[in-house]
Structure formats: C-alpha cells, structure tokens
Length: 176
Image (cartoon, rainbow, N blue to C red):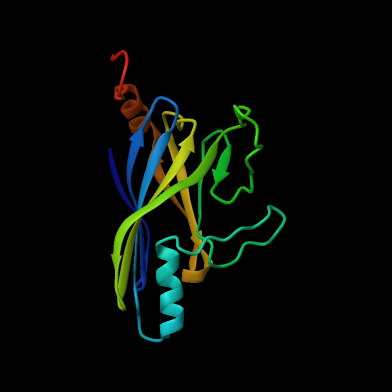
C-alpha cells in the first residue's frame, strides 16, 4: 500500500516513507532516499555519502557504544509507549528456532536498486517491523546526524496497515 510521506527534506537530502507491504505477522516498510551534491561538499565527502546511501558501508557497533554520525536511525513509537529502532543493539541468539523476541522489533532488511553519479544518488531501503502496528496512528522516526537530520517524527496510519494485512493472501495453501 502506498504511504508516500516525506520524512525529511533539505537541499541535499530527501527521505520518503514510500510504502508498506503488510503480512499477517508484520510489515515490510519501503523507504526512498535521495541525495545530491551541493556546493561546499568536497569529492571525498560526496563519495562517502554516496556509498552510505547504497548501504555499502555497514557500521558494526555494540549497544553500549555511541553511534557514529554516519548511521541513519529509524524507529517506531506506538500509542502504548512501546518502541523499536533500527539501532536497538539486539543480537541474534544463535538458537534455532530462535526464541520469540519481545516486540516490537524494527530491522533494516535490505537496500535495493537505485542510481547514482557524481551529482546525485537515490536508493530504496526496506525495513521489517514486527509485529503489526496497532490499528491506530503511530509515529515513525528518522535521525541522521551526518546529514543534519534531527530526530523527526511523522504520524502513520496503523489502521490502514492492519487492514492491508487482513487482505493479505498466502502464496501457497489456503486462501481467505
């Protein structure tokens, strides 16, 4: 389902909450990031930012470490006060099957196609949110110090996502 909400925009960067693909157990959130080289940004800085947009530079950090400015942070906050971020610091237990986690959980699941050159770059990212949000408005957050993105909240319609999950059909097996 389309969401099409501008999360943040400056002369150099735009971050859009583009879509949601709802499943009975959670939701895949689609983001579109676009950046352009502006006056005053040197070539080395531009190419470092270019690589970050495509997710080519992954940062490993421990929960107790301070986050580098290069790390983009996404998060959700539900009306009951529960929240999750992409930088919560949770690690895989190594157990199989894994233990059922305490929710909610928000994880970056992928970065995909895009385009880029010496003046601009765009990229599509996906996040996985578990479980489904409640059927009421909730907040989606972004922060990215490297691009001077302050902690910014945008309201999202949880009821529309839950309704989309209710319409979800399995690929195989029984259908509704």
